[in-house]
Length: 252
Image 1 (spheres, rainbow, N blue to C red):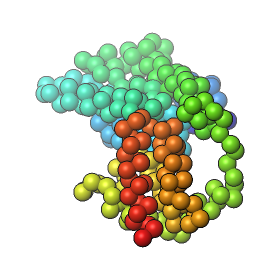
Image 2 (image 1 turned 90 degrees about the vertical axis):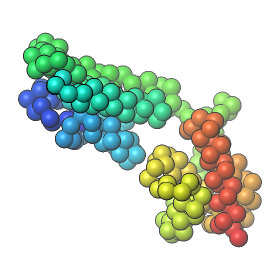
Image 3 (image 1 turned 135 degrees about the vertical axis):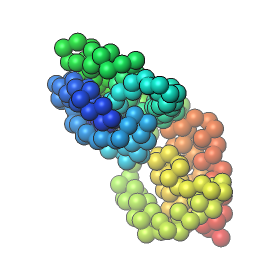
């Protein structure tokens, strides 16, 4: 299956970002990737777009392209630092495969030298980095759904049970989401949760409703184990606590 890559572009300096885009697309097309291009007003918005794309589950990785040129105020430092921090958070905290192609330069001449496909070709470099990280992610994390935390094989999923869980989520989503919101900190919205965590809590809640023949302990153990496969210890404990309370709320 071809890698699905989002090319996220800041068009603030269009003549520069166009050259970055061309270099990235050449590399991605040569690798046989399926590419979607989306534009944002500036570099500051790039992490937000890529975070939304990650939540959608539609992409294997992303290439962030743009240019920030130093001006007379501190705005340059703020935009450079925050855009880099936002992307690094996605890379480290959420294990996203992102190629960094935001030019941070002193003047337009430096930007053109780095964007030009016959010189720096930083668009290509960012695309190559994204593809490399997708490869590493698949190699290091691709077997997580087939292997348990203790390296034991996990049995193949029962399609009928899977279908019943999905149907239960759809049929009871309003009640499920209301219950989950009731167990989050004040002011939190469901969209603040990682997409995988959100799906895990919804599926567990659906089982509490639809599979009355299963005990709370069995369902809780199943989903906490899944949480350990996808998240670190702290987030797994969060899932455990929320699901434990949801069992009490949904099975009164």
